[in-house]
Image (tube, rainbow, N blue to C red; front, side, top):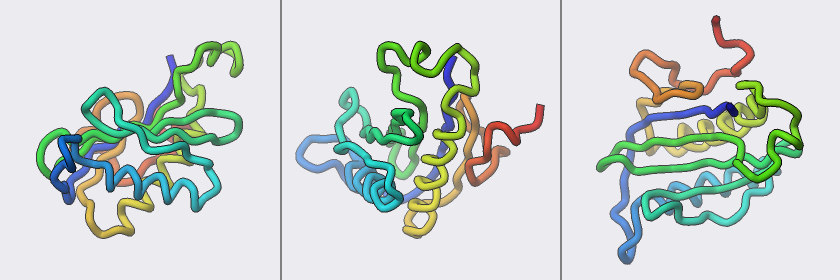
Length: 147
């Protein structure tokens, strides 16, 4: 099992352009923030006709950011290692903390980008499970998580 940092938040939701799903502008903004931090994002790509995905690289890990509009003005976001063939062979094992520092690095950039835009609010971040209202409003390091 690999780790993932999940977020739920509120904010502007532009209407979809030309029959595509909403969020492309948001995903492009995230990709630009990743590029500004030297994380080499790939192109913003549509994901299963439901959202947008951006892949980047951190410490030899391929990390993906998935952005989904779940209803008008509400968003889900997931930062997780990409599932390429040979992931566990490359990084040795099946620990639930595989890729955690890299996911945290990307999540911090994404969080900073969204907060600084002033267009998004009410963040809740949680490792591996859907966020709840009582979860922190900023991503936190996995290794600092209580019990």
